[in-house]
Length: 231
Image (cartoon, rainbow, N blue to C red; front, side, top):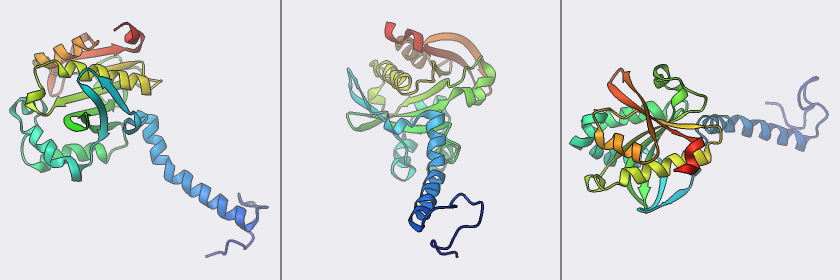
């Protein structure tokens, strides 16, 4: 290993630097390399972990990226709720939910699974994803930085009282407020899931079309940035 006070080879990036400057240059290079994955995530989804909380009529709401070691048991329970399983099709042992999460967590950051916390209590599961980079983009005229939402309300006691509408409005506002390059928020609930479709409509989305996806016939829901202040 070459000592830091040994002259650098001719033509290197450290030519003319003293020992301290060489060390600083090396540290800076390493920091940049370590930051590349974070910069890539920020470019894809602008880091939902730091979007902060939103005040809603139901309480303070925020998104927190899933940590399987902490959250897997909770999410597995939600996925085995019959109302959830009918559309998410992830009922079964924890390994089923873990595999679903791993596909996102081990990916390139284009989809981030999150818990939705209301006044600090986990009560919903969200996937925030780049719709324009998703297979969904083959089924509609995507625009750069379209951002998609998947959602489930985990606890049955929170369903059927308008909470989905409240949270969808809040999360769509969070996306548009934190992703300046995103002009539209996209969703594709199963057309049979009437409560979900209604929640999207009531939170400012419009149904642009019905589309046939490999696993379902979906309502293509779109919320436009241009209409954000009119809703």
